[in-house]
Image (cartoon, rainbow, N blue to C red; front, top):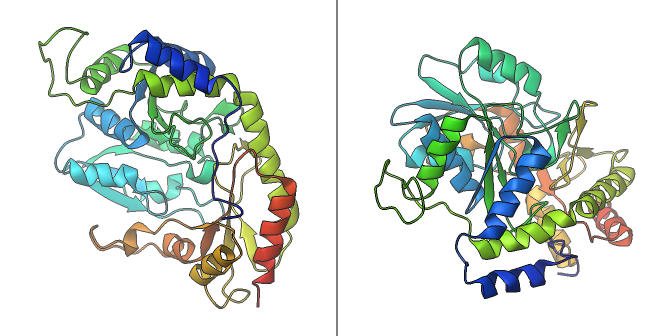
Length: 363
């Protein structure tokens, strides 16, 4: 590809810190894991941050911490990356899918409310592509029904809503540090919360159910969700450069907006005025009348030009392993959204080429 879909933003001490971790002999746990967790607690202003092996492990960990079990229902959006729902299936809980807003592509309090039952044990709003759900309304609804909320900010680290970081509105927040994300540890994830007892319980679940290092007295039936010290070393270097990384992503988003927001047949994801996004992926919805060949053909056409893109997420209702349901907005987005290259080092000239190539495919 002349223009790949994603490139990590390395610009500091990544190599140095990884070598230091290797020389320390602490390549599993170690000081870099501790430093990374401390940085996130301070930056996100949460009492506890637990670094884990990936964002999906972060979701699994919070489900364990909340005691989500067989037959429990958890409300999730129908248009999103399916990790939150997939973990539920694997622990024999039941994902209940709510449709999303046609403009923001995020789950809403109104769609959630219609799905609440006596079996509802949690709500998982997902901040898709870096947008932020309307958390005030969601939290008000959840509080009135005594239902815990897990904010899935895997794609929205450092995005804010009314001046407050996403992931910090609910009892629990999770993030991803996958290779394509704003901060990367290659693979990696994070859980944040303020509850001391819940953090202690999740810490044990993360580490085989053990209360401390060197002890084999398993307190709970835990798993291994630990992040390695080598990966955390990469993350520590990343956070030192976080302001430049965020600025780069914001520049990329603004240049895309300048090229595309007034183009007929191409509609950008809508961000409400109270949202300041750190966009993980710039995505647009293609109108069938402007692109009668269909979104998938556009992906192929751009690939032939050396531009790597991704189709939008597949709606839950179009995946065969979930119980039958129908979500018209999610299905429409699933068939028409295309995700464009988005990373801090992407040049303005390359963005111009991407946009010109996309516009050229209009019929």
